Image 1 (tube, rainbow, N blue to C red):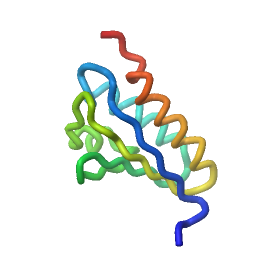
Image 2 (cartoon, rainbow, N blue to C red):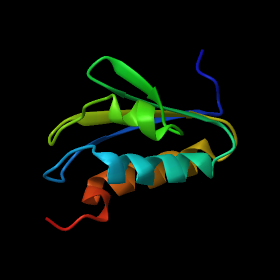
Image 3 (cartoon, helix red, strand yellow):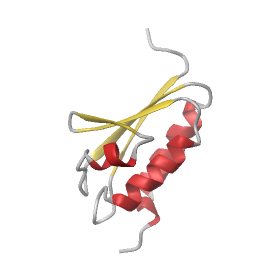
Image 4 (tube, one colour):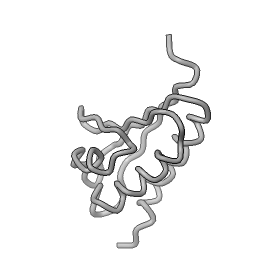
Length: 94
């Protein structure tokens, strides 16, 4: 049985450079504003979304799919924000 305060979502990386330091910082900044737990996974690797260093170890390139899981109150809000961030190419202009 799934926790009612657990929400999942996914998004494909569309920016041309993938998950480098700036996108990792953007994800961590959003996750740190959320009081609950946020996890990101990509191709079998997992990372705490609140850790820039862990996010960078995902080595997620363009076209990779990031899967998000958040637990806690307002988990849906943080997942929607993270998915939107990735789908918008991390606000980067190539």
